[in-house]
Image (cartoon, rainbow, N blue to C red):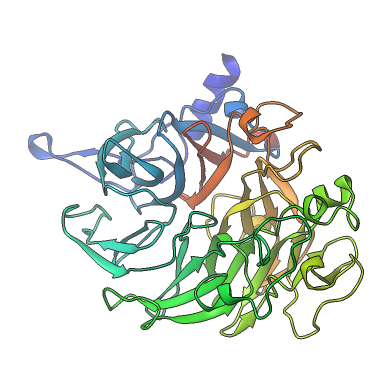
Length: 441
């Protein structure tokens, strides 16, 4: 309890470091936001079960939220949560912290559709279902003005259940980028069938398996109005626009079942670790090579997929783009966030956080992931090896199935104070990580 009290007192010195609304009592008891008000966060004495670097603390902002996917935070600390499945007809939740202690309460729910993507800027709140993208008008505080009044920006996108989440990102030129995942594992003639060979050219790539670009100043756009910005990406759930580099970066989910589909080429252990989960820096016209190649992080090479004649060693086409970071296989990167805040130490500035959701495809080997990793960046490029920033979400050291994990990181967002929010669609929990500097005192 002494440690608990110490952290609460310590955090009371921070300006702007609180979730939700801070209050200034004016004439007649009127309350309004005041960026200079000091508040105290009730940090968890055990960091909410997470393992963090020295100097960091954590708390649970909310739980029992359903299946929260991506999240967005207003300049005043209000939190929007996109639910994978609508609960009681509400697929978006809005939370606020009334007393500044870090615990938030659901204030509003709207949007009768499930999905993953949610973003907020001055032009509105953007949210996606598995086939459409919507925009709600917001006021100066980032609050949705009228949930019943919504623009359908994009419609008619392919939803064939497999890899169907439509994650989104915005640039600074009025464009919105949408992941349209491939409704296939590796474009086989018979999907996920033993020894079935791949189709070439892969017909899926005309409408899926890449990133599409649309405008934010038009409505009811579909494939005809948008354009395929990048191709050869099996599925991207985590993507973010890098403000410093002015480019779109994405995290790809690598293909599954190398051993299951081609047991004569790949053993169980190899299949559990290949292919890499990969980060790409995209230009218009980028091609990451799916389904024809995969990236082997052990050989540091693009390898021809077995569906197209590969044997685990043959190299893929040279004109396919290389990833800028390669992680071990089957970690399932579900969110990407470039950190621009001032709260964390300088090493984190402009670097990339990745939320790893964990995957079933390492079976029968032990599962991995269930953490948040960090990649340092300099001048828009990785400047060092990745490291595990936040761990312990699974609640146990040994996971044989994703269902055994207590929490699975899914979404990331940066608060106005520079703290980091992490959503979890397994336990329905929203975490917040702050830097307290206590370890250096």
